[in-house]
Length: 265
Length: 206
Image (cartoon, rainbow over all chains, first blue to last red; front, side, top):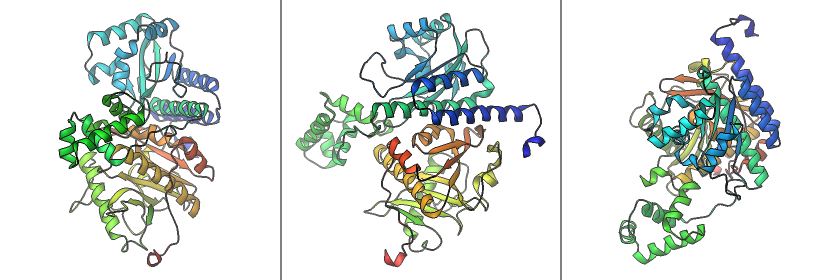
């Protein structure tokens, strides 16, 4: 109905077009049952929005074989992907780093304003450009209790970024990531909470204080319990995660959402 | 357990309600710095009237507020229709079978694991409440930083427009559809959490 009243061109019309692209993508993604269909959809939506590349990934070491539920879909230049994995550049990827600093879509060219870049970070960006990857937009996907991830869309080196569509990209990137995540979860047959470890409230208290760097004696004094009891709680929590050191246990508890990073700061 | 609180049982639940308004002040004004009014440490606005309904999770021991949402009728003044209509790039979904989810608030006292649990219980309660009362969908205005979490709950959620910057944040309008399959969708996403929601229980029988 109201459509005839809208101007044929200008921002409003463009907004409607991008909303339509987003909606069609969402509807199609919802019907998708497997990863390869989803890949085609994402590739198509990337082109529709004026991008040349996409990458939808969980930020984990993808060379590890047991990562059944982790996602890695991309069509970046092959030579770049090879270098990236081979030299473990993900540890120095400033785009990944910036994606932990926000939950909103951002342009790669704005990253120097978001985080401090070291020489190593800048080298990664330069290398990417050399391999043909230009500017891009990344939608962070940091879900509590799960590995961090992101969905990025990028243009060829030298081409201008369709930056005006940042907010539409935020929408589409979030939907894309979630669709991929749902398919990966179904494939792995394990909902994210399925293999979770249980910690008692007291074990959690001790783990948080240990994570803040408190000694057993300090934890015992703060909680008003015996030092031996503290050690016992921490040992049990450690055993439940099947890890050898306390620091590993604390990190696991942060990773699966039992402890917020802010609890430790 | 999740309780439904509305004008018919408000007085009976006055402690839960006040505890909720207090947490809303802490969360939306103190933490998130929303530019909204408050008085005596309580965040109450013009939509907290007799037509508003609340789903509230209270601490079983000390009865204090752990998490809540406010539901507004969309055939009356509501946030999307009256404050942010420009977030919809299509006609705003309104009507007697559509409610607006507003003021989703998790107590700042909760730890990370509890936050997820209470969030899941509220989402489950929202689906169950809709199925029990003939609500077919919810609308809502959300900060886009939460978008991934909202999608990841598993329910069917569509954007109503391209998100737009408001002040320092990016916000967007969403439409959540509820059908009998919604419970399955929550289960598949691992976010279903028994809500204990019941309808039609009179305060005296409780």
